[in-house]
Length: 429
Image (cartoon, rainbow, N blue to C red; front, side, top):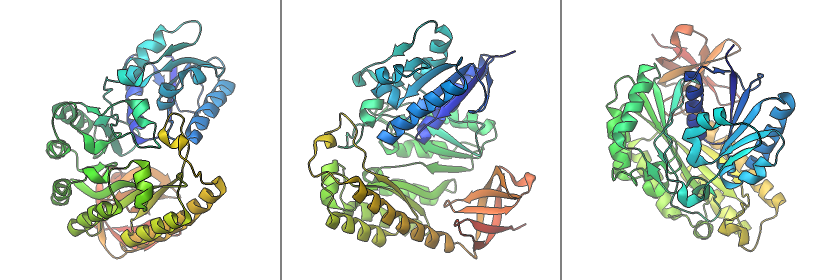
């Protein structure tokens, strides 16, 4: 009977692409991959450390797995494992803690393990390897990791310490992975990385070079850019995405604050004027583009006036969605020592206000699609006899389940919207 392995992924799309690659390695060596809730011989946790809540979630997950499956070998990797390996190693049940630099050796480290807990850790300056990864067999979309690390060192962020400097594989290697994904029957690729638009630091190529090369891969019908810094979203990239039938009109652009004084303290590399200019440039070429925005509230020194400025700015640019985070103090970052901390109760109130704004903006965006005919890529998820999929500009659509439509791009007339902002659709033959 084959040994059984389960995978538990916390955090970003990058982690999901890496976990899927871990799974392929184990399956190629004869292991049976089982669900995260099933009994397993080995349980792999790919951790996140973007907030204290993420650290806590990982610790709780380790304890829950150990209680449910006390004989299992628990291996922890990812950003939390990189930043605090000793802390994780002290948790009962942990057998292996692996740095981000050693992810490619996960299978080897696990099968070699015997006896007491083993820790493989390294300093940030030693984070130089690139672990090539893409997701598979998880859903209609595949996440392709094209870049890792970040050179920006924003005042609140630990990512530079957890993943090291910006680096990437050559364009040709990534095109090869995209062809492999196409051969497996996947139709859509989400291009992901820590600082995706910074692609090329290792090879001297540009992000636009990568997009153009991927555009030529036969069998892939859709691409999405998971996230791109506003200062790296050039007019040339926007024009290319607007002209290409494969690159979807969907952009995730981190803002973090609508106050220039807060942005400066955060050590971000743009102003609100520059951000607004990038949004305007997208909309000139793609008027109905989905634009998602990250916002942090409660950053040290954020006054009520700063927050009101952020609200007015968000109203003015009217994104389709907001990803809202209360500020989380991360040890070792400059922001830990900043004065004028914002009370957690105040930050919570600000989160609630932006969540209400998000609901309104997202409803407005989705409602504008009613009456149009869109191309929808349907996924395998079925609920209440309905299948779900996404338009090119990321409106979620539901229609009566038809197995023949799964993982196909189908023309759909959007006829209405429910309370969750899902659009109802009729298949157009």
